Image (tube, rainbow, N blue to C red):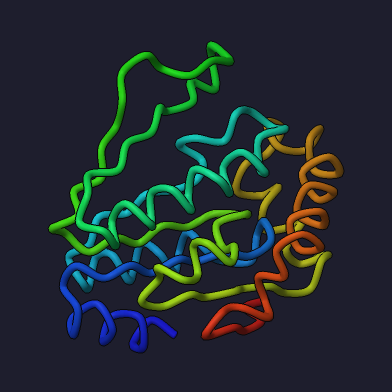
Length: 172
């Protein structure tokens, strides 16, 4: 999976890799590796989820960023401040001259897929994913697991990311 994404970005140095999947499946690990090997900018949806209820909004932001990048335009977004529970006033920007890897639950939609060089869906056994996610994030995520999982379910119903992904696999 890493090799296919890196090859695509080396062939298109201004390309876009969109990685989606359920929490704990390994999206961030994959995205970091691809970005590192390809010299790409990594953007995580964690940067702009509007708190624990913000998955759907992040799907729209992702589609906008990927489309702007594909058009050669600078994409912008506001970072979510998890401690203050609000968006930062300062915009973050995405340079279209540098390859982009964008990852997070909710990243892949029909709009994002149309502009992606490579789109990837990662899933896995629910119990294993939950264990990995809660081990990673601990007490900060545990109270929100069920709410977040319900948002993932809604994203899957609304956007069918596994069926539109070019590559998909079970990581756990």
